[in-house]
Length: 181
Image: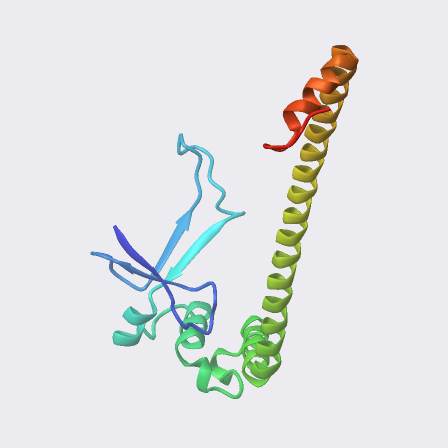
């Protein structure tokens, strides 16, 4: 079993902290198989979980060079200005470039995130306003239909009752204490 928690305040927004109980080593590889266990997506999909805390407490320098480079990158790169020569590879250079860009352009990234957040809020408010307006228009249309039906019904009653009915209706509508004609 594993305990999984979201990495709060992490420099890597999609990072997860995973602690495997009773696991040895710091590198775990998972492969995807079908339910029958026959087909495996080994060449297409493989998930590597690196337990950084375990590595920090017990670094294994006999780790294969590629994995050693990544372990050092994830645990030390925040203090580097460039990738150390002993682990320098094009992939780690690219990762270092992304990390450097985030570090040197944090103000620009914060401004960009703030702008995106503002736009999301504005779009949400515009959508809610449009929905409220549509709901109001629909309610007014229903009310207008009801008033139209009511007016037609009154008109039918008025014409079907004849002229005497109008006087009775007038009599009922006269104020109290008044005279009827």
